[in-house]
Image (cartoon, rainbow, N blue to C red; front, side, top):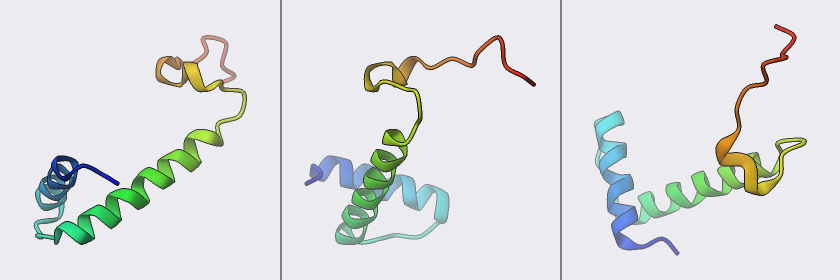
Length: 64
């Protein structure tokens, strides 16, 4: 469960970007879903180890 402080931060960010107030319950559910999505996406990066994700740099030998 997300701490109340994180839920309030999510509510403030949501209001800033969408101009709408949302309830704490809605914010908690939306944040939970966003975290689940991030978790799924982070697991699906091929060839990446979990400990090196934060320091990923583009390869200098890219084919572009």
